[in-house]
Image (cartoon, rainbow, N blue to C red; front, side, top):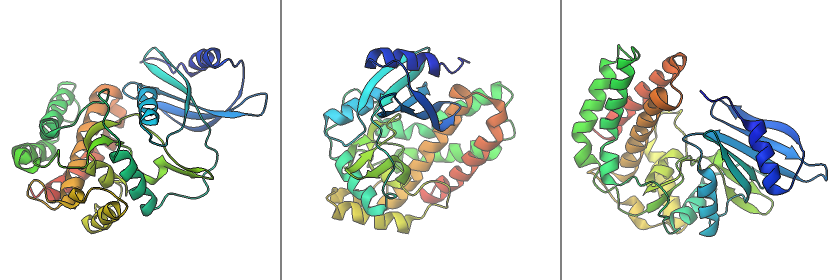
Length: 303
């Protein structure tokens, strides 16, 4: 595993930005990424964000979003080194308040109304339908590595979802279909003195915008279709397409959105476990999350 090259990356960014030194202050750091606030000798500040694959193209997504009129922090400079991306970003300062549901609905309307960009990966119906099968492939890889062995319940849930996926994935490309932020939570929406900015575009793609709306309230609590329906109504009131409320895959929009968002998360957790993190010591945490989400998938998608 590549050691974190943040210091070397920062030196490269300083060269690109015509800077030489700064005081570094950690804001948030985890195994695959980090955020620091830099204070330069002249008193100005910037955000230094670094991340490893598969989060290493966020600079492209942010520049695309900016070009297309989505309010995002400016990218002052970016560089890639040994599979790690480093960015110098505009420092938005301290938020004046937390984002609420109305803020989220309004921001989603802006993002989903932006024309799609060819550079983004696409999650269409075929790709959505394949998520349970892809998760089963990850499970096979984990078992080959003598991990996730006693997981008959997970295999069964994925098998059942895979069999229902063709019918339940219908309506994937019904509007809103386009930019999906994919980390769309109140913490990704910065409300500052000069308006709002959307952060954290590392996993943006083209796909069903309902996945963003389903992620807004987080995944720690039990999914709440009634609460999401209220949020979908706000989204339409704020100018989002009324098609957001349309039934799809034989299900109400809110159940379809929550069910497929949880399935999308399951496949991602399992891919992380075998591919990106690949650390057996994290297995208990991931297994617990996968089991919990799959219980929700079976219930929400009525499998």
